[in-house]
Length: 233
Image (tube, rainbow, N blue to C red; front, side):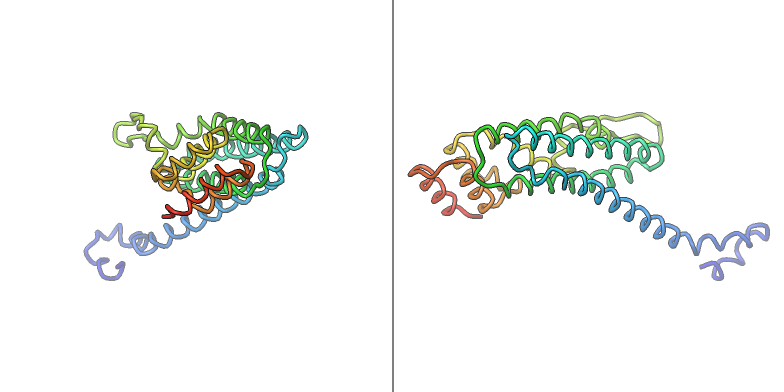
């Protein structure tokens, strides 16, 4: 491109227009560095969550404290990332990058919780408490990704919080999981049959395993599991 159009540029600019040729390379270089930084943050969050030991036995004080510490580490890391990234990045780049990181975190914690089995009643309440704590502490971060800054007029425009579900589909699933922890068995079965849980990203096997982990074996549990298996999507 440089050689093709060099003759059309004023002589004082001809020595500079090589930049037109290498701009795409600079963009790709910047994108590669950004992806490396995103993966580095995701790795740090994984390390923090590993300390929660899969969120097992949180009805025991020591295990609950470990899980709480892990959540607090995640909040601390993400807060530091926001402080560094938000002022430096274009709003769209910051939103895209932070949403990738948050989706990774919410997917990981949801996966860990759905892998638990044979949960005590007190354990379900503690897990629900941990989810609510995490979401409350991350609320300022949510606000940062649903706020758009118009580069033209420098005005901050608030976007409906409902867009969080679109930006962070894994968040919607985690919120629904928190609801399931204190929901009656029949109600869980009903909302599965309505398609609501599937819309939040749950699979039939995840719902079945959750029911087996939370509710003791009974004729009602057998009936509800049969109903879920009969309406697999």
